[in-house]
Length: 342
Image 1: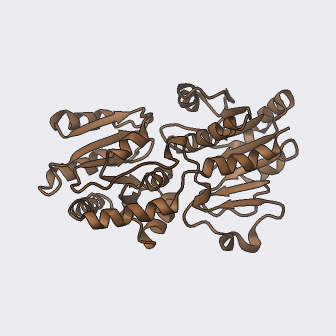
Image 2: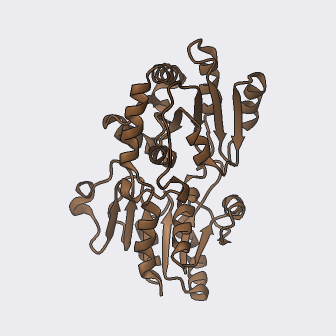
Image 3: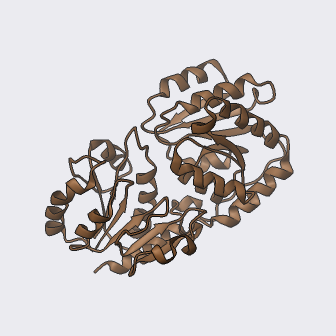
């Protein structure tokens, strides 16, 4: 059995659990049993909804070292073959203790060094062996770069066409959208005469506390729809001519689908991702909310108008993005992790 330790709630969103579910599904295809470990009932809502096996630890998701006694009891009872951890709150000491009982892996969104794990996965566009270099942990296997982006099966060999006229825009701001950016971006786009008549689909995350405000905007405009608890993300991407997206796993889904993107960041760990895409000429960069504040929405609307009017630019972005991500990353990770199974 493979254990996956991940959380989801209104503060950290759903990204950790969603990408781990893609890995879990790939491991199940290889005949491996998978069980999620989550701190509290907040994370279990999403897992239960997606028919994933899970155990609730009843612990604090921000203090992972405190859950070690609980984990040891579970390890003695279940005897797992491997534990994959996807949390920004995991410490080197946490892994040193766990590794006494079970091989471990870490999903890393930055460049974490000194973490004593058997496998470290960093699928981000900026990840490279040179960044870890001599600081990398001896005995750790590194799975780095977009070849290891863990996407769901529908993104493999996805079919997408760049249409002559851009009419439909997908907006996604992450699982919680703590700054209510979905409403702010939508309001600004609808107020601009160049973008007011486009058709907007806003995907609201499971923990978005601003859903009612979004829905109120949609109720006033026939060209706006707001969707939550989305299961058909690939279908929404396929019907979209453009996407406005926060940095994170959705960027790689859009890449695999080939949807031209205007990206932005609103937390520090997104900035490196969106800058990596922008510096390689793969997307339009809409800005950093932590730096620009409310003016970021104006920048995004500017790029929205520019891209909607330029099919060749949209086509160029689409082709380059699809070369970056092939959709096979979850299966590659599963192949590595299942090697630890009995």
